Length: 456
Image 1 (tube, one colour):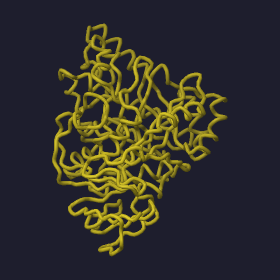
Image 2 (cartoon, one colour):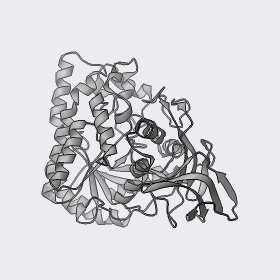
Image 3 (cartoon, one colour):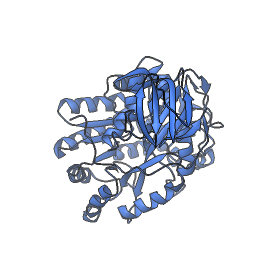
Image 4 (cartoon, helix red, strand yellow):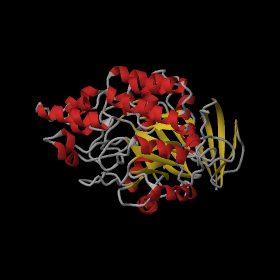
């Protein structure tokens, strides 16, 4: 099948230009002005940007927390993702205590069977020992080249020594480990302090996890990476102080990759005082104005590498598990559908970054680090035809009622955005047209190569 996209502005990290895009057999066949070719379908992209399909580096679909399971599974979550312009999600296959990596991967492949966008997995590791080490090479052979470890949560926490050993072991094979960076002992002590004061509502959540709790964790990871000699990936970076630790480490020669999320450039800590403040309980929490400004500056100066969503959705009934105790509120929020329009509105439209940098943050760098480039993440001849046609002049208001995710709330409820994803091609097929999902369940597993450490 041949599809011709006409009259749009092709946006790549290296620049933008008026050009047409010809797609044949699921691949980009030609990019040039005024292409004249026979096609089964012609799409007029006049007035729109044409981007490589967006890659969400951080989602949690169908995640069982023990007390509850996320509202979105792969079926609902990937429908929302692709309508928002995300053509590939990287979710976390979670190896729980007593489970093998092989079992976790098998389980997540089963969960992902009804995906409407392409998908891959990071392997989230709750145990690091000789038995898990034996499985690592098999994960690479299965297309898994990225892993995750936590400094927090009783069910997932590993020691600093285990992070150090895993960085060396996985790094030597061309992999990378993302780490949730917070000082767990301190935040647990602060939770106890707030409860002792009778401070039990959602406004206590950010008090227990202040900027310094993240910054200390980031600083510790930077030193661990310095000692291991291999790169580090900081997931969902949210603070000015944490970003400064990344910059300091890079000046010392440490190779660091930093991810942030839309909530850290759009929302702020005051929202915990709202009547539905529980929906904003996520970790890291929403931050102050200075942190938002710092994250935008990091995006502008290319110190932030990519933007994921940390989509981990719960209904208001699930959030009510913590109605009398903020520490029992399931952590996470919905955002997988709104990432591109939020980044465009709050970063591009404000002049903090360019459309070219948006392409870098939402597509190219994620594809590079996570072993998908140049098949994914770039508009070039021979690359997969995962393509987003984004209308920069389509203002609207975000609402959970019109989003496709499965939970009855959105942290971005009522937020006005300037543009939106209009059409999406996935593996060369038109699956979203005029903002509507017309062809679901077309997602394919993305087998990934070893990481490309592009900051070297």
